[in-house]
Image 1 (spheres, rainbow, N blue to C red):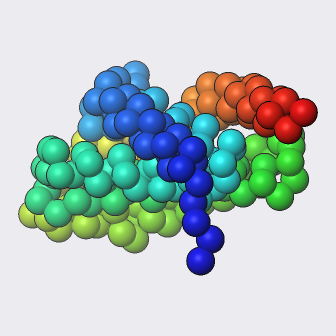
Image 2: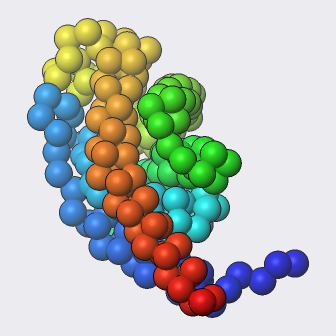
Length: 202
């Protein structure tokens, strides 16, 4: 079994701490339901995925959500919100991290593939698992839950359209924000780290 270097473990710990702190600072998005909020906590995980590999990014997402559930619990009892955040964040950073790990570069095609797979996977997860689980744990009907979506988007008239016209656009905004901020920073940091590694062997 390959041993994880101490430097890697330390870096993952620092990035996880940054992710946990950023997770507390959530802000609403205009024209979306108030329970859909954005935060910057996925960016440290993206940094980890692009500098140390996709598994590092996924581990940071895991640690963030474990700490959040232990510290704050869940408004529906079971950690459905944390599981949803973990799945969303892991897909987001894992996809782009895997592409970068294989290609050693990113381009328009890389972003397009990552975003399309992410949006499709999140549509299916929300439709079949996340939203039904929340409704079941809260004890509310589908019609009652959909009202919260219809108030912000008249096109959301049923469960399918609520996910398609509210959840999918929200996730597009989320992944775009994380990639626009996180990818350039991560790649610059990775270049600096590579230079320092080369100097260390001179």
